[in-house]
Length: 327
Image (cartoon, rainbow, N blue to C red; front, side, top):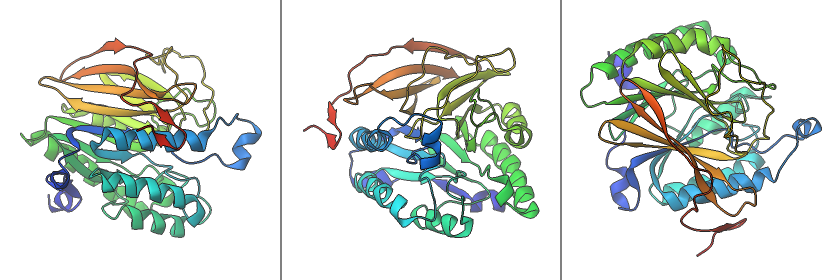
């Protein structure tokens, strides 16, 4: 099991440096990239860069114990210009004691994949392109690379082997209560633009469903919030970090979105472990860009799931402006 240990990092005392972060809260965001010009030809932009800035401002205010970015952090991974604002956000978060981790999306390896991945790795040195895991407050977050065309056959095989071994190890570990799996491409989505990834379904979903402690599968790529309940487990799409909102097909029996009335343009997710369940909350940016509200909360138990709260207009702790939180 040495290969599992080599790709495992346990989040422990980093947050004790500031005593400010909530070590019991884990945040997730995806698709924080700015729109590309070609996207605006058929999709409507909506102050997307401002929305991304406000999202990171709100995360700085919230100070979760860790933040996980599920790919498409920037729209061109090789571009220094695209990384410049993101570097400011990462510096601010890490300066507050928030640990920030990420996985590759398709935009990081677009155009010039070697250069893009190198610049990504410089900013997230703990990242392993064939999968790695972080453990936060007894919640294991397993991070996978769904850019299969950029993996060699050997790397693809190695990731699948590591993934299976890691889930078995974590499931047997009494110190781990829940397992969250994340990758960039969504196994289930009704997006008209990107569609569901059958490759992710084939490679990652089976082991997830068969592992008892695996309760939540998170992904992006589809610029939406979607929630699917498959074989008794939860799959959420959280691609609301700043990319252009994508149109959705109506739900079907095979692809039944359980959140048909909750479709925020910009949003991120937090997870908090309670005594016998996880509270998973989507935080949405208001239409007037003044605040992030708690939008939709779901309680995920060890053996079942139910929506506890669906609330649309709870005020955030601090109103915001486009330049940052008001003091």
